Image (cartoon, rainbow, N blue to C red):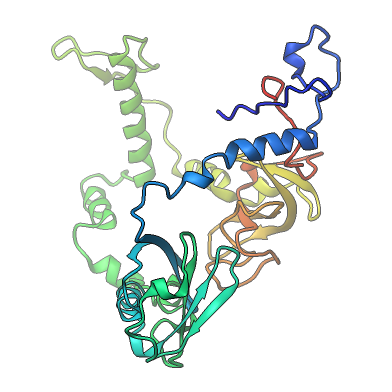
Length: 346
């Protein structure tokens, strides 16, 4: 927990949560500038001593790369290390050879304070550049044919996925389909859906037996083994009904009825809020989905599916496809990050 220590000066305005007041109808407290400054001071209190345990000649730097999103944080270096040493370390982490590295030394504000072209200053020590903890060394890959260009080392959508054809899968042994086929040969009435239902019921009966609860209808304890056994079958199992029910749960067209593009919504898990931008079938994901553009970067998509077909517009991380059961529409305005929603905290 973070305890916000408010100023104790007599002329400061002290704000208390409603739970501390005898009048529960009072308005919620507002967050003043003094409160924000107090919070900032608390969070940054140890910043000045963050590197106090480091040796005088040791420095922690971040490595970044022009072709990569990854950031190698707090790389421990000695100020007596040469630029050639730095290039070799960057080579190990990014794959860019030293001859293709144009280095930029950036301060804590991201401002470039030194440029080091390839094949220069190799024997110069990094301490020469008055480098400090928290700075970054950015590598610009000068090779137009670099293996890291265009996201080749990070974008998994560029990797061709292996997809087995139906015929190849059907010919394989030891698969679920092969097992079901063998069960079908023994029992003409066998179906995977029926087997899954019976297994689920047997598991539930075993669970209730272990807890000492009453067994489900149609089950009783075997006198010999003491284990729960089925004593009567339910009504004849209709496989087609189960298929329809599973399809409805997994995303049938009825699961998105009542939604409209433009509606504000809140989705689970996480109580994330946003605006509905798409409603309909997504072939790549199977079934019907609700496309939401979130107010904050709490999604997993940008309105497209795996970088392919685009169903709506959203910035990366601001979009998502949700099942209708996880979406609630209504008066869900964009949250104010300074809004106090808890009546038990200040």
